[in-house]
Every structure is written in structure tokens, then in C-alpha cells.
Image (cartoon, rainbow, N blue to C red; front, top):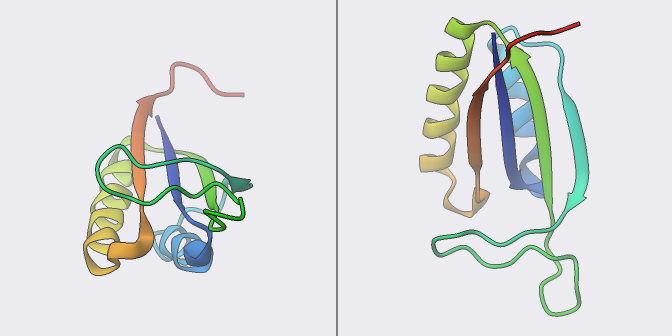
Length: 97
């Protein structure tokens, strides 16, 4: 199994959730109002007066094959939406309950 951590502009929450649902992934956890700044060229999303935008972060655990499908779909979504500020990471899951 694989864990996927996804951070993205909060305005795109519905698109990210629908992406997962369309690939058959039902379970996930979302953290709302997450601040951060991209490591390349993104603007800070800090929820402050100067930088009012914020992010959401989503965590899901999936079968190995589905992780590849989700990452492919996320890459396509990120390419199509430059303001998305999407970052996604796949991690191994050693044990789940």
C-alpha cells in the first residue's frame, strides 16, 4: 500500500476530491487552512493580510497500482492549472489498521 500526501490551493478542493472519487478512492483526510510557500516559484499561501490565500492538505492510503494512477491524474491537473500550486508525495505504508 501507498500513502499519498497532497497540498494544493484551497480553491481547488472540489477538483482534487473529484479526481480521487473518479478513480475509485473514497477515503481521505483533509486539513483545511494550511499555510505554506512553494520551493520553486509559487506565492506564499499564509492566510495573512499580505498573503491571504491558503492551502488544503489531503492524505489518503491506496493500493500500489492506484497510487500511480492518482499521481498521473494529479500531474495532468497540475499542468492544466498553473495556479493550483499542487505538490504530491507518495510514501510506503508498512502497516495499516
